Length: 86
Image (cartoon, rainbow, N blue to C red; front, side):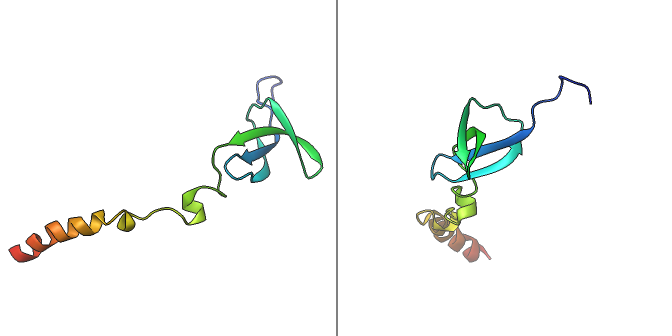
């Protein structure tokens, strides 16, 4: 490999700011801070959300069907006229 043209690929500590979840993985991300995790110091990168706090992965994502009855109102309003036309 050519020297000086590749980014630094190293282990980085990622912290989810919404719940404090921490994990270490390898990354090229630029960091300014460091933190200790399991007795070792890593470059620190702060995340707004991760798989531990994202609604899709935690199962708290709202479905289209339970959005305040909007879908049911639509079906009531337009479903009857479509059935009557047949």
